[in-house]
Length: 428
Image (cartoon, rainbow, N blue to C red; front, top):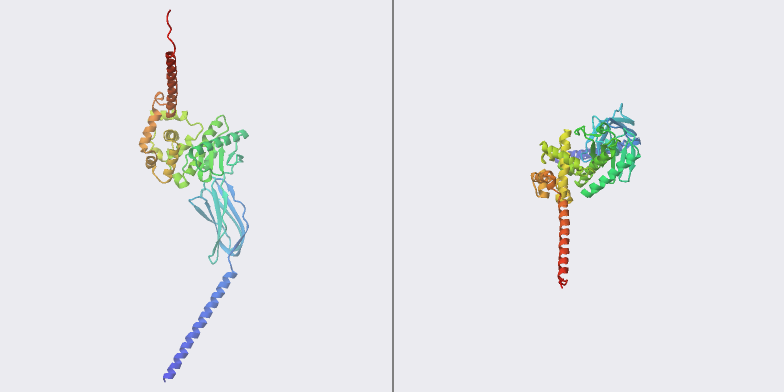
């Protein structure tokens, strides 16, 4: 009886073992079949044609793609973004009538819905999905979002390229010379790394320029810098004032590109006080001087001169107030350069780029509070002219007077010694 039970138990164990082995083999075979099936239905896309994007500036960007896939594509999405630190990506679904292996895609991007910065570098790619929800992407392609509304004339010296649309060759040469001089001055002041290529766009009027503005830019502004893209845009008509305007606007905007470099990029640049950022740019203008002095004197007399603390942040959107703010900022920078030197201006840029606030940066570099700096500047600026020659003028006159005085004393001494050596005249 026990033997019978044992044999039955042994048969049961054999049954379980045989079933387990069969199950494992079946599962393995099924897995192998699945893997073979995936390999046979590999998902890949071959690009046949991808033409350059078609830009209608400030309106649309049209992107096209012709490709074939190994399995039907059920979803096609365009991804596009600016190649900057913010990496804002726009996703747009392309229209597919039916799942297909033949792809003829067109996507028209509305620039009123997704605004890219003028002159920025954009990158885009396509993302495809099949019925099994597998995803594959194309390699990113880049292009520049340029203002192609006009037939631009160009002139370059290798580093600087000037674009203009109205005016003859002499206008372009004058603009390039203004850019060269302005870049040289700014580099002497800021002593930073120069970009390999800088673009200068010159519009004939503010209305044409305005399409390049961001939503926060005031409508009266006649120049803008795009420091991430090493590009500036200014409004200068070809008239009798062109030379003055070119030598003012272009050096101003070029200074911002070098300030951006000196601040180490976007984060440091955005932390600079407005009075320092704009003040350096105004100081770099070829014609900075007497006109701003008259403006500041008038503002002081009417008690409309803003405090330096107020100028730490964005200037007023009111044009008349902003003009005073620009002039005051430039004069404060000139005061710092004259009394503390160029090195301290560069130290200020680095201090603010490190994250210091408006007052703390001045305290660290100049050993002054912001209000003390303002008081010293005001005293030097608004003291009557007869009592405030510059440090350099005072020392020059003092040195000259000293030389003349010493020379006269020396001559008198020689004369007296000569008289002592002569015999006295006698009456006979």
